[in-house]
Image (cartoon, rainbow, N blue to C red):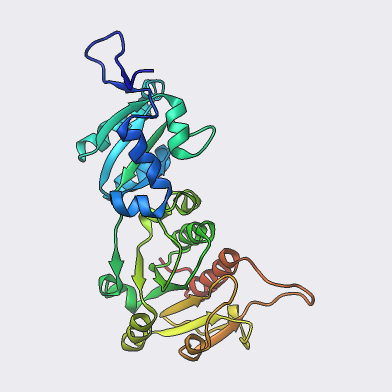
Length: 281
């Protein structure tokens, strides 16, 4: 099989048909964190996610579709828009799109984008004066992380702070689970020490969902601005993080129930905080 194949119209773009093509090999490496780091890029699948990324001015690297996909006007328009923002356009056989996306039935268009690395110094001053900032301590499940970003976007959270050794927000699973909110919701990286120092200097109160909590989550005095912090899926928050909190809250549950999924528990907490402010925009 040849690497590339021209259509009958010599003016048409080359169509990549071989898995041995260097572009295909490079794109396949994006499934792994090491590959994303080396390429300084990550994959977004589907028109909805790509539209969100471009709308929020994320830098596109490549946009990849099939000849069949380009017959759809919305895909052709999206490709043109990405090209105008500097993206390289590639056409590939649908089975190669499936290999890159690691899905049997991939979307008709994929794109790669440059990641962003924000730290606590990038948190806007206005986001410390009103509303909710969400902190996640060593969240390990990318599906949880993506879902939390999506919920945070929906619940008017100002931003998400990833503390310590969290999973990769740019993994296939996290990007998919976010449903595009990864591009809309600012997220910041912080070490444990830097976060605790920043929290102290910010003057913000901090509430944790904890098995040691005494106040029901919906009765916490969140105030005009506050931090909600959620712990690791298995071990929760370490003692020194709970000691840094102003309030330890508990989410009421029936007798005999075990625990909530982290993403679900986070949703209850951020909605309680937003609701305490009358769902102010």
